[in-house]
Length: 382
Ligand code: KG4
Ligand code: ZN
Image: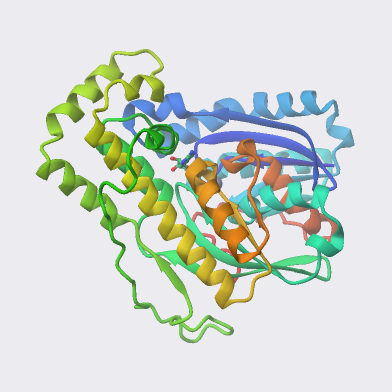
């Protein structure tokens, strides 16, 4: 039984997971309300909230799981990537706890955690041959901080990853958040755009994504991917295009009116915003979401084909998007390639995915030592 701890961004989370697949508890204290007035995560406030929440969250997760500290076999914690101060709260806590209890400590990459949010559920239902050591999966990790494609392979008890795609500027979730802010909607933006998009025409505004050529040469890294093979995302262009569109179509006054009206509502919801959006705004929102989802979909399946992946996994906060799930599932069905998403609760940041990713490392005796520290820029795989 592993106690997982996650504090890389704006959720303080703890979970107890048995054998990497059975979730006994999954506690998340969200800081959305704290960062809401700023329209984005404020790192100093995040660290302070983690400090305040970590002990109650860990206690709550043990209580829900019905286990005591003595029954835990190991403690797993996110070592990066993420906000340095935020990561440090979880790491310091996990290290102290492991030392005090005399239990092993396992360090987990947050991105690997997101992939295991899917694997832990798939492994519970699939047999080893369906989802075990055979073949490789193409994983799209798409969140507020990341848009990455990985080839994930399980062999000899260990997961290995190869990074085959990434964003050259903003992450997809960041684009959702910035565009929502630009349109006077709530924070974080993804769920707002998700809820409003079905009310608009997704073909009303044609956005185009430029093809990005490899500029960065990772020469000298053994086994590094040929840059021409790597797949690149870019989401800052569509953000600028959205801004330009609102200016050209003189939407500023209605955006500010919406922003002010929502600010006057206590705990505003997307349903409140719907009444404050005219049809051109809803069409713009729908077109934005369609463009981002289709760019992610095209490049993900192109990668799956190029690298001969046997299945596709989509994870991270943006994987909660309903249009994304529908359009990815449709393409997977057309191509006869299996696809898996995490349950909604495991799409966004949580600690169950950290405990799940730690399980094979625990089984292989891959433990962290007292030198473990925050790695804000930690990469996954080669
Ligand atoms: O994985 P996550 O909780 O944290 C990071 O590691 O970044 O992802 C948060 C991101 C935010 O950008 C949020 O707007 C986005 O996921 N998100 C969504 C949806 N729910 C959350 N984006 C699109 N549609 C959603 N339904
Ligand atoms: Zn995340």
